[in-house]
Length: 202
Image (cartoon, rainbow, N blue to C red; front, top):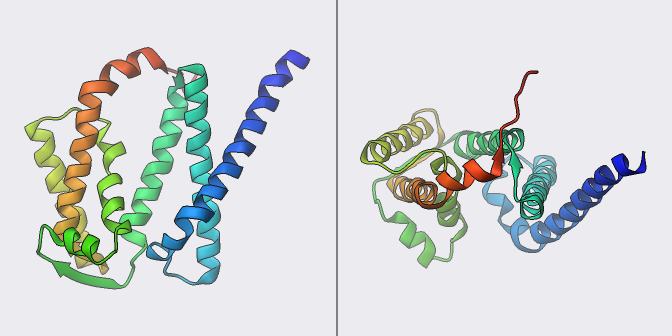
């Protein structure tokens, strides 16, 4: 009985460690930027802080397990992408409800960086990398990615969910491309050796 319980105790302790580290990291480096994505009052901001900390904790936990075991279950990978897509929907369509505007400068992010506002450009550069990891780089995929990003920006403008910004389009497309390149050169062969396929139904 002890042998069967020890792995679970270790996993619980590992997650608690990940939570402690994630809370420290979020409170030390990220909480000052939370106002960019929490525009619905103090109570919502507090709840969002907890949710973000839990998300960071989970991804840290998955990463440490991957480093330890050198393998990942497909179910774990699916859960990571479920959290990612849920977060992406919020960041793209729900954080700026009631806002509308446009910027047709494809390099508008340079002005933001020069003015000291680096958080939004960095987020735009990073947020689509996980999506780009799902498929290889090709001209067709780049075109489809570009059209998809344009559609997202258009929806933000039409439905008052944000600003149509060509600078965001540039960074998001670069983000997708970085993910595509990483998939092409590293992930394609790696996942065959390290991702364990787990059947969802017996």
